[in-house]
Figure 1 (spheres, rainbow, N blue to C red):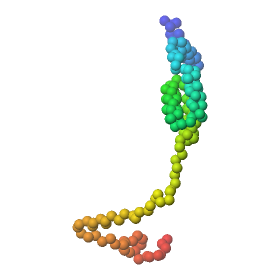
Figure 2 (figure 1 turned 45 degrees about the vertical axis):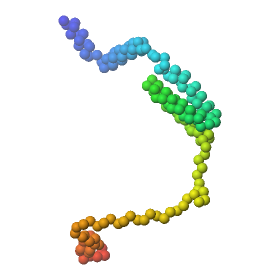
Figure 3 (figure 1 turned 90 degrees about the horizontal axis):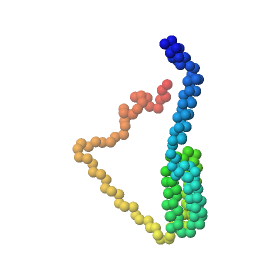
Figure 4 (figure 1 turned 180 degrees about the vertical axis):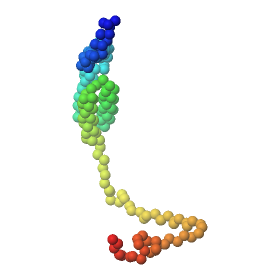
Length: 175
Protein backbone atom coordinates (compact mmCIF):
# COMPACT_ATOMS: atom_id res chain seq x y z
CA UNK A 1 0.00 0.00 0.00
CA UNK A 2 2.83 2.30 0.81
CA UNK A 3 4.33 1.75 -2.66
CA UNK A 4 1.08 2.81 -4.32
CA UNK A 5 0.96 6.02 -2.30
CA UNK A 6 4.53 6.84 -3.22
CA UNK A 7 3.74 6.34 -6.89
CA UNK A 8 0.63 8.55 -6.65
CA UNK A 9 2.55 11.29 -4.85
CA UNK A 10 5.29 11.08 -7.47
CA UNK A 11 2.77 11.61 -10.28
CA UNK A 12 1.22 14.56 -8.47
CA UNK A 13 4.56 16.24 -8.04
CA UNK A 14 5.76 15.85 -11.63
CA UNK A 15 6.98 19.10 -12.95
CA UNK A 16 4.94 21.12 -15.38
CA UNK A 17 7.55 20.61 -18.08
CA UNK A 18 7.30 16.82 -17.77
CA UNK A 19 3.49 16.94 -17.96
CA UNK A 20 3.62 19.28 -20.93
CA UNK A 21 6.15 17.10 -22.75
CA UNK A 22 4.03 13.99 -22.18
CA UNK A 23 0.90 15.76 -23.42
CA UNK A 24 2.77 17.04 -26.48
CA UNK A 25 4.09 13.56 -27.32
CA UNK A 26 0.57 12.11 -27.01
CA UNK A 27 -0.86 14.79 -29.32
CA UNK A 28 1.88 14.24 -31.89
CA UNK A 29 1.18 10.52 -31.87
CA UNK A 30 -2.55 11.18 -32.27
CA UNK A 31 -1.95 13.53 -35.21
CA UNK A 32 0.42 11.07 -36.86
CA UNK A 33 -2.17 8.29 -36.61
CA UNK A 34 -4.87 10.59 -38.02
CA UNK A 35 -2.56 11.56 -40.88
CA UNK A 36 -1.92 7.91 -41.72
CA UNK A 37 -5.61 7.04 -41.64
CA UNK A 38 -6.75 10.08 -43.61
CA UNK A 39 -7.96 9.33 -47.09
CA UNK A 40 -6.93 12.08 -49.46
CA UNK A 41 -9.08 12.68 -52.50
CA UNK A 42 -6.77 13.34 -55.44
CA UNK A 43 -8.97 16.15 -56.77
CA UNK A 44 -8.75 18.00 -53.46
CA UNK A 45 -5.05 18.72 -53.38
CA UNK A 46 -3.34 22.01 -54.14
CA UNK A 47 -1.21 20.33 -56.80
CA UNK A 48 -4.27 19.08 -58.67
CA UNK A 49 -5.87 22.52 -58.41
CA UNK A 50 -2.84 24.32 -59.84
CA UNK A 51 -2.43 21.70 -62.59
CA UNK A 52 -6.00 22.42 -63.71
CA UNK A 53 -6.09 26.15 -62.96
CA UNK A 54 -2.91 27.49 -64.56
CA UNK A 55 -3.60 26.11 -68.08
CA UNK A 56 -7.09 27.65 -67.91
CA UNK A 57 -5.60 31.00 -66.93
CA UNK A 58 -3.11 30.87 -69.81
CA UNK A 59 -5.82 29.80 -72.27
CA UNK A 60 -8.17 32.62 -71.24
CA UNK A 61 -5.37 35.23 -71.32
CA UNK A 62 -4.39 34.17 -74.84
CA UNK A 63 -8.01 34.11 -75.96
CA UNK A 64 -8.56 37.61 -74.53
CA UNK A 65 -5.59 38.90 -76.48
CA UNK A 66 -6.87 37.27 -79.69
CA UNK A 67 -10.57 38.16 -79.28
CA UNK A 68 -11.96 39.68 -82.48
CA UNK A 69 -15.72 39.91 -81.91
CA UNK A 70 -18.29 40.41 -79.17
CA UNK A 71 -19.37 36.76 -79.13
CA UNK A 72 -15.84 35.65 -78.25
CA UNK A 73 -15.64 38.22 -75.47
CA UNK A 74 -19.01 37.09 -74.11
CA UNK A 75 -17.78 33.49 -74.01
CA UNK A 76 -14.63 34.64 -72.20
CA UNK A 77 -16.74 36.45 -69.59
CA UNK A 78 -18.64 33.22 -68.94
CA UNK A 79 -15.36 31.29 -68.70
CA UNK A 80 -13.90 33.72 -66.16
CA UNK A 81 -16.97 33.18 -63.98
CA UNK A 82 -16.26 29.44 -64.12
CA UNK A 83 -12.67 30.12 -63.11
CA UNK A 84 -13.84 32.14 -60.10
CA UNK A 85 -16.24 29.36 -59.11
CA UNK A 86 -13.37 26.89 -59.31
CA UNK A 87 -11.41 29.06 -56.86
CA UNK A 88 -14.38 29.28 -54.51
CA UNK A 89 -14.87 25.51 -54.50
CA UNK A 90 -11.17 24.92 -53.86
CA UNK A 91 -10.86 27.42 -51.03
CA UNK A 92 -11.65 24.73 -48.44
CA UNK A 93 -8.42 22.82 -49.08
CA UNK A 94 -6.15 25.57 -50.38
CA UNK A 95 -3.97 27.68 -48.13
CA UNK A 96 -4.99 31.35 -47.85
CA UNK A 97 -1.92 32.39 -49.83
CA UNK A 98 -2.91 30.07 -52.68
CA UNK A 99 -6.46 31.45 -52.67
CA UNK A 100 -5.14 35.03 -52.85
CA UNK A 101 -2.73 34.12 -55.64
CA UNK A 102 -5.45 32.35 -57.64
CA UNK A 103 -7.83 35.26 -57.12
CA UNK A 104 -5.17 37.71 -58.31
CA UNK A 105 -4.55 35.56 -61.41
CA UNK A 106 -8.27 35.48 -62.14
CA UNK A 107 -8.48 39.25 -61.71
CA UNK A 108 -5.63 39.75 -64.19
CA UNK A 109 -7.51 37.60 -66.71
CA UNK A 110 -10.73 39.52 -66.02
CA UNK A 111 -8.89 42.79 -66.66
CA UNK A 112 -7.55 41.40 -69.96
CA UNK A 113 -11.09 40.38 -70.93
CA UNK A 114 -12.42 43.84 -70.05
CA UNK A 115 -9.69 45.38 -72.19
CA UNK A 116 -10.64 43.07 -75.06
CA UNK A 117 -14.27 44.04 -74.61
CA UNK A 118 -13.38 47.73 -74.87
CA UNK A 119 -11.27 47.05 -77.94
CA UNK A 120 -13.88 44.92 -79.75
CA UNK A 121 -17.17 46.55 -78.71
CA UNK A 122 -18.45 49.37 -80.87
CA UNK A 123 -17.72 52.76 -79.43
CA UNK A 124 -20.69 54.59 -78.05
CA UNK A 125 -21.05 57.93 -79.72
CA UNK A 126 -22.24 60.83 -77.67
CA UNK A 127 -22.90 64.30 -78.84
CA UNK A 128 -25.58 66.77 -79.61
CA UNK A 129 -26.65 67.13 -83.18
CA UNK A 130 -27.91 70.41 -84.40
CA UNK A 131 -31.64 70.54 -83.91
CA UNK A 132 -31.81 67.30 -81.93
CA UNK A 133 -32.60 69.03 -78.70
CA UNK A 134 -35.33 71.61 -78.27
CA UNK A 135 -36.11 73.68 -75.27
CA UNK A 136 -39.68 73.60 -74.11
CA UNK A 137 -41.48 76.08 -71.95
CA UNK A 138 -41.75 75.01 -68.35
CA UNK A 139 -45.06 73.52 -67.43
CA UNK A 140 -47.57 75.73 -65.71
CA UNK A 141 -47.07 75.90 -61.96
CA UNK A 142 -49.47 73.70 -60.03
CA UNK A 143 -52.29 75.55 -58.33
CA UNK A 144 -51.57 76.77 -54.81
CA UNK A 145 -52.96 74.53 -52.10
CA UNK A 146 -56.21 75.66 -50.60
CA UNK A 147 -56.15 77.10 -47.12
CA UNK A 148 -57.54 74.75 -44.48
CA UNK A 149 -61.01 75.49 -43.25
CA UNK A 150 -61.22 76.75 -39.71
CA UNK A 151 -59.98 79.72 -37.75
CA UNK A 152 -57.54 81.85 -39.64
CA UNK A 153 -54.03 81.96 -38.22
CA UNK A 154 -51.85 84.93 -39.05
CA UNK A 155 -48.16 84.43 -39.52
CA UNK A 156 -46.38 87.28 -37.84
CA UNK A 157 -42.75 88.21 -37.47
CA UNK A 158 -41.35 87.88 -33.98
CA UNK A 159 -41.85 90.99 -31.93
CA UNK A 160 -39.39 92.50 -29.54
CA UNK A 161 -41.12 90.77 -26.68
CA UNK A 162 -40.74 87.38 -28.33
CA UNK A 163 -37.15 87.94 -29.51
CA UNK A 164 -34.36 86.20 -27.64
CA UNK A 165 -32.11 88.22 -25.33
CA UNK A 166 -32.58 90.61 -22.45
CA UNK A 167 -35.67 92.79 -22.59
CA UNK A 168 -34.98 96.43 -23.35
CA UNK A 169 -31.25 95.96 -23.99
CA UNK A 170 -30.96 96.18 -27.75
CA UNK A 171 -27.42 96.23 -29.17
CA UNK A 172 -25.78 96.34 -25.75
CA UNK A 173 -22.85 94.09 -24.90
CA UNK A 174 -23.47 92.14 -21.75
CA UNK A 175 -20.57 90.90 -19.70
